[in-house]
Image 1 (cartoon, rainbow, N blue to C red):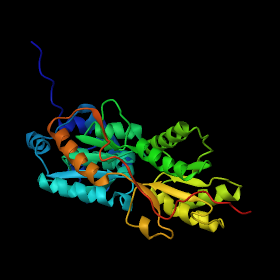
Image 2 (cartoon, helix red, strand yellow):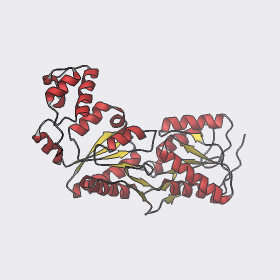
Image 3 (spheres, helix red, strand yellow):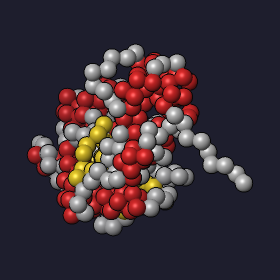
Image 4 (tube, rainbow, N blue to C red):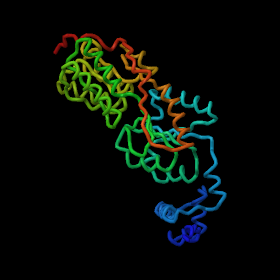
Length: 341
């Protein structure tokens, strides 16, 4: 007859970490008055992991209870693009008797102490993690494997439950719009990460269908400042694009300013169309043509999937294809003009 595995004791954790049992207890209880060197804290937490230490039965019961909180770990918490997504998710969560707390995705994936506090402290019942903006795969896997999770914006990944918008279709719609206006010199203004990569594919698909050759992409980044710098550099070097497909409308703010600062006009010299609608897009001069994606719908869907994960974790990928991406044509796009100079 096989014996059951012996449960580790606090004293064994302390011995392995070469500290006192009292210090282990204070670290476990996150004593706010405790001052301890980071390497000592890390050694204690590693010993807890190695021995799979569980404090006592009441702690196990606490982990099996629910907080009523869903954590949304976003890379760009203040990005106005995601305001509608978050608002709808909060409403959907409230309908299911949950509340949503916003977290910083970069900090969660990059900082072990933040991750451990979330997992061991059972701060949330489930976690929605925003991905797609950088090479964050390794840390993402660890976090998502420790808390019931849904990863938003990621490509299909074994072992993860993912949900995303139809980025490829959105970029195809944007590119076809410029093609239909008569543009043949169309550049993609992109950024780092899987989300931008999918949008590049949509841009290339539309050009391929039309028999139009792509031109070199412009590195713009995910924020207005980086995008403006990229566009100014492009046109200062003699860039000839008459149409720009921009990865997101936050970046398009910088693109808009960069085109003007380069001494060119919109849409007379350069037409600009971006992915995502936001409150500011119609207030630019000229207003920005955009491809609208269903952020409100995916906010509700993400909450439903996350609550399902809490009840019964499973892998799988969902791409929200309906409602389809929708072009909102405004003043930033027109037929190509004759650029002077």
